[in-house]
Image (tube, rainbow, N blue to C red; front, side):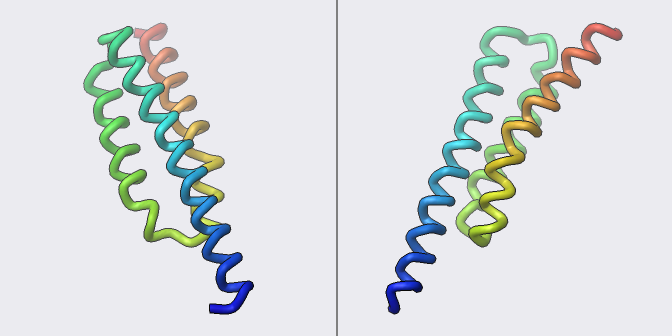
Length: 91
């Protein structure tokens, strides 16, 4: 393998690790909510399962896909949780 091939593989490995960490933070956030508040337990559990399934498939994605996923997962979970709060307030 050439040096550029090693560099690309290394960069993808680092990006995979960073994306996994972002998913892990999202999982922790959802789990903490389940511990603290049972108001939307079914919805939060469904989102948690969805996020965990996505995290388990990360090895199949390209470097650029991983970067996009890393940047969007925490916002996706934050938006989901904000939506739950709005739903709770309006109910």
